[in-house]
Image (cartoon, rainbow, N blue to C red):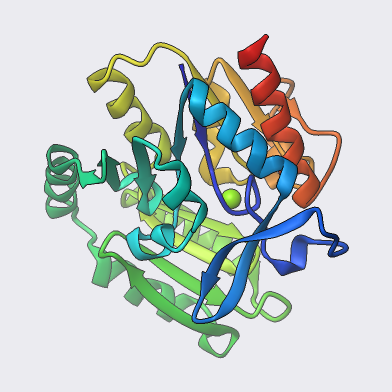
Length: 260
Ligand SMILES: [Mg+2]
């Protein structure tokens, strides 16, 4: 059994998702001297407890560098982790090169490549409403927009155009991701499950990028504030609480269900 979990807004939270700072909240990511992400102390305790019983698999859209900033995982050392939304798998601290090779091969045979897709996006979107865009680890475009100004209806049209060409367009908050369809969290997780004979997956996630993982898991958990909560149709657990406390609740649910 494994616990596959998204990180941001599922078990770790940036400042804007914390209602009040109490001694119960602690930083779990510090970058350039700045605290970036937090968990409650109770959540950290439960995560440690879970990690002693089953494998925890962080499954994140963060790139390799961003993942390694999470200090918590220097303590817990998950055996497996999935980064770049599924394009990169690490096992025992090393890249699963067989997987990366498969992903790169598929990228190589795409008709509409990375340059083409971003060119089309730039043509269709109002670029003055885009803060910055970057290619993350060569695997996905991360576009940061001005949330209040950006016209998300343009994105709906672009989504259709992209989908026909093998690209997934996902907007979560101020970020828009352009990702080849075959690069997804569930494919990567299945690769791990098949290769290492994992039978049962408990999964947690908040965004549409986590949809398949949560739906297909034996037990799927979504924080109440997550957009995914609106897409579950009864196929999963939605937490009672929101924000950083939902993160705590998710880990409580997992801890109690595996020690029961
Ligand atoms: Mg998330």
